[in-house]
Length: 315
Image 1: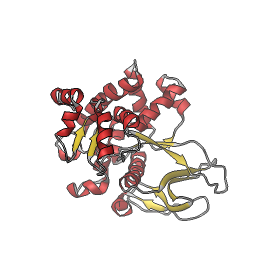
Image 2: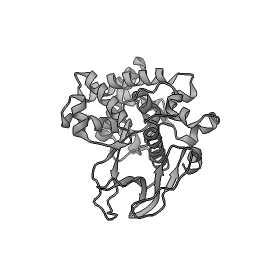
Image 3: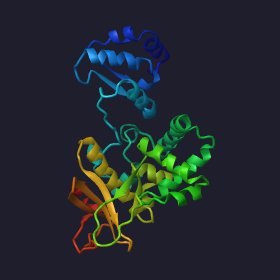
Image 4: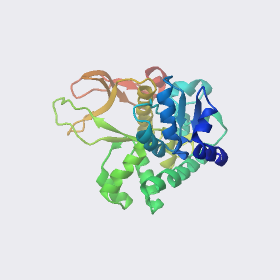
C-alpha cells in the first residue's frame, strides 16, 4: 500500500483488488488503505482458511485501530521485536560483548552495511515525525526527543515518573502517556515487581528497559564499542540486553512465562524472575564482568550468574 496507484486501486475497487489474490496475499502498510478492512472481513468470513492474508505495518497504531474496528476476533497477532541473539550470533561469531551491545539487534544493522549511528539517527527521526506526531499531536518534538534520551539513560533502573517528568520539563501525566507510546512502539518496556513477599516490604515501582541495547547505547551517547569495555553504562546495558532476550523468547515462542524483578525496601534486589503461574521457574542475576562470583539473594539462595563469558549458554 506504499505505492499510490496500488493504494488507489485497493481503495476505489476493494473487491477487484482482493479478487487478484484467490490464494491470499501479504499486504504491507495495510493501515494506508482503511476501507479495505471491511472487505477483508467479508472475505475472511467466507473463506475459513487460516493465514489467508498477512497484514503488516511499520506504524502499528493505525493497523491496530483498523483491526479492532473491522477484524476483531478474526486475527492472530505476532509481535516482531528485534532479532534475538540466537538468530544472528552465527553471522558474527567473533564479535565480543561490547560489539553486540553497541550494534544492537535491529535487522538492517545485520543484513546491510549501515553504521549503527547512522541507522539509529534516521530511525529516531522518522519514528518521532511519524508515530509520535500522528498519535499524540506533540507540538514540541524537542521535549519528546529529550524524553527518549532520558529514558535510555534510565534503562535498567527503577522508573520514577515524577523525576523523569521534571528532568524533561513536562507534566507527570504527559510522561505517563509518552511511556505508553514507547511501550506500544516496542521501544521500551516496564518490568513489574514480583508480587510475593520474601520477608521485607517489596517496592512497587517498576523498572524501565529499552528493548534494544544498541538503541539504548546510542541514545545514551555511546559512539563506539570500545567505550563499553569500561564505564558506568556497561552494566545497565548488559542487563537491558539480558531482559530483552528473555522477552523475545517469550514473544517468539508464545510462552506463558511472565517476567518480573524483585527489590525490597532495604535495597536487596533480584534482577529477573521468570514465573509460570504461581511457580518461579528461573531466578537470574545479571553481571557483565568476566569473573564469575557468587551472588546471594535476601534468603541466602544462590542466584544464576548471566555474565559476559557465559551469555550464549545462559541465554
